[in-house]
Image (tube, rainbow, N blue to C red; front, side, top):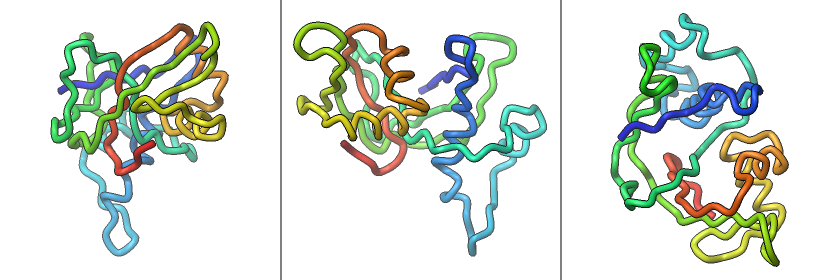
Length: 160
């Protein structure tokens, strides 16, 4: 199933393409040398990848009101979805795990996050934000700026 990613949020570059590549590049190592699929080089040629040290984006958080995302489904990583410039920027990979997430902004649970019904400690919220591609917890809560219920879709083995 297609997962679309933004290249900018609030006018600021996300570097999600680079951060997702950083999360999967070890799968393309043989004898400590990288053997990348052709699309990696296509991304470089199209200037979709910058040469940056990116902290890996190892999952994504999405609404899923129809409960469509399941373990084993294949993820198609795209940018510019539903445009002429739509582009797959990473290999198709399986969903490794799915967790429910609730993000609270208001009331007594304000600025808190629950995963699978358990409230995360402050340091784990910071880890979650960084693992989802945000530079800071503040950026994370600025993006998720109201109460939110959805899923964390993982393509690595990490769980919270």
